[in-house]
Length: 313
View (cartoon, rainbow, N blue to C red):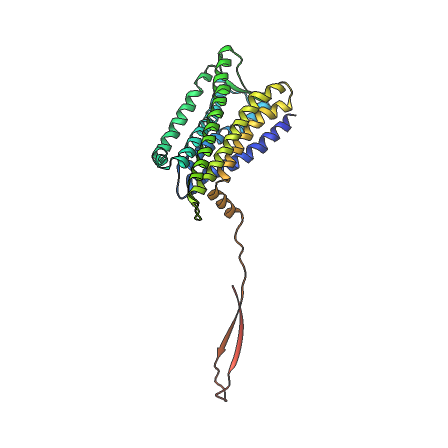
């Protein structure tokens, strides 16, 4: 059974690392014009990569009992993976706010979500994520560690309270906030669209912003589904073995893989870049006939020789 679980982990993690890694590379090095959305999407992918890389390396080693490091190191692994989780989770809220201002209040959007401000938001996000894992620094009181098949919190009164607040409570709150903002954005957009006079000319910028809004909504749905599955469905299958593993460890990795796919590969410019990299343009061989007429001096001054040559390109 351990081998089956490891295969599942490898498949999900490799899928997620590829799409998150490629998207991260594209948004950092290849995209011509960076926007606040691409900066925030990069934050999500960074958090996803932290979680997925640790899962594909650390989890199989622990599952097969191939590593037994000092607790001070193993405890830090749990903290680092939580930093990746919180970094991704907090960015969902910023993405929803970003779409709200981009569609409903474009002038405020340019000021609030300028590239410089968005970078500052990213630093604040990372700082808050690091602060969130401070309670899990105490080996005998509260840690987050991988135990056989599951990531678990230490069973102590203090750790139970902290995990319920930061994991369950924050997850529910974040889900309510992002959905409320997204629904408000869609409602106000439809209202504004109805108020505008009909026109035959399409607004390309508006279409692009709406497409990105739907990407944001889809990735927020994946976050809420992850929290719901982990906190509300998985407890009913406690100690069930494979089902519990799929509803907890596997689905956590699925979320980080899927969110990177939605924000990255579904982004039009990135999709076209990936498509161009995979599908090379075909080189068509054209056969061109060239007729060369050369005058040759013979005894008959009016005689000529005609030569035909085939040239291939």
